Length: 197
Image (cartoon, rainbow, N blue to C red; front, top):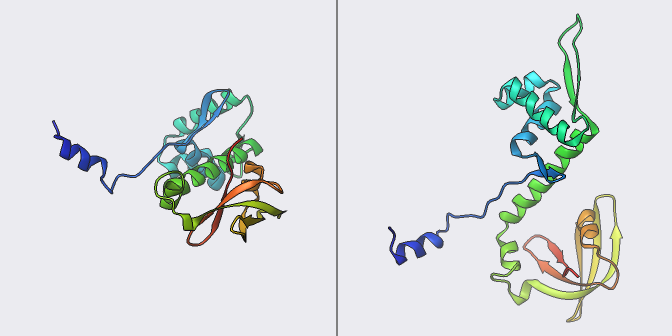
């Protein structure tokens, strides 16, 4: 049994970091997690289920069953296979759905990993935010490009800050002219936050 001092030391251990697992669900059923994403990635690169199984260190049967289970839940193919002829063995490739699932998983995984590893983000969501890097203002201009979007914010001081953020972030936050937002200034970039209504 630990005494109070040891428990306190354990809770403030600097080596401890937040962690989580990401998976995609369909109709409440999990269809794609880390292992599944590795399988789809390997099939995409190797163009073969047997080669993908070898690359991931999994059995052919396990990989095949994993894909079959996904397709049963989705009621649509994730991997398209073709039989080999005299010239050689068969092959496999991801369908549009398979490509889409893998892309979505990697996007969410990357975003979550970035947030979990971003100490400034944790400060921003309630721990140690300081006045010098949290500025409230009004959106004065939104220009959407193919990948990024330019958001011009007039700070209440008044100062205008221009942030280059992803187009996806602008659409997820539904940022439009006249919105009240907060510019969270990091060392190398300006993030944009908006209160949920």
